[in-house]
Image (tube, rainbow, N blue to C red; front, side):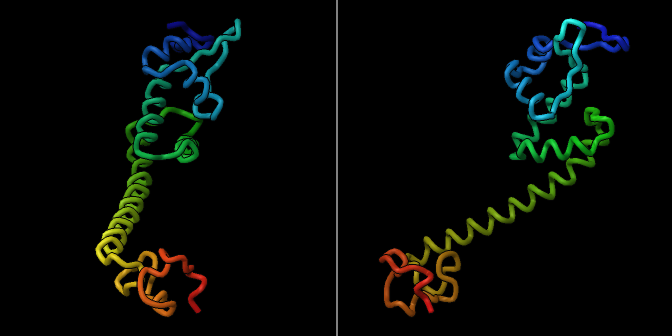
Length: 157
């Protein structure tokens, strides 16, 4: 660990890699994506703040929850001066994440219910199939699984 010009401890990229378990290429990628902003020493080497360890943990946890780098970047952009999320920041940011996760769960639950109904009916032209044939519109084309037989939803008039 080295001291920067402002006397705050900094980490070289190799040290940050060891502390976080992330490859140096991943750290450079996050920098290129604007998620990390290292300083440079007189020799041009990257120097990271110790808080970047927590920032990287936030990024990895957010990614594991299914959030995109754009989502993560937007969340981090709400922090003043690009600082690392504090416990209070995480509580605030996690409320939005929870809302997004709840929305995904609702969508996946609806998809599961639709698939179960579709699989259960055995025929894509049954009135109970809400996924491919709402209101049994394909029945106008004839008996049987019309869309599997080559008809198209645009054939229904």
